Image 1 (cartoon, rainbow, N blue to C red):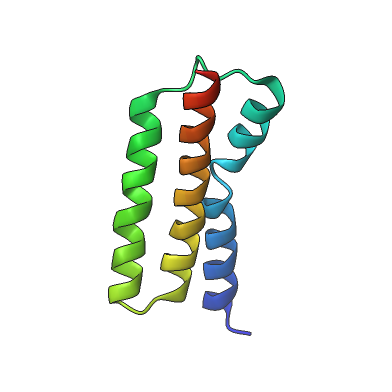
Image 2: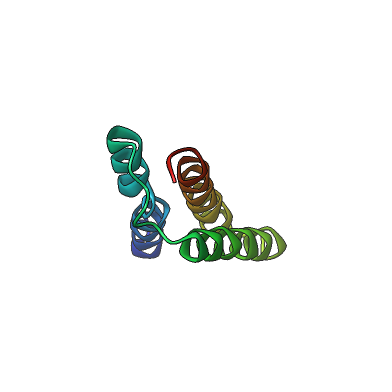
Length: 84
């Protein structure tokens, strides 16, 4: 295994998990008043732009990571709408 693959994998794993602790906390507490709508939307847009870039560059790490990041931001959006 190349060292670049290992760092790519670890970077992808940590970036992809960025929103999930907040998703879990928001789901458990049913509390989202402190979450910013703007921040959630920016997170979703960031994910979309990077997914498209990753697909265009045929870079598995980029598009998989950012697909997961988008899903996390989208789940926060749903929770914010439900519990907001």
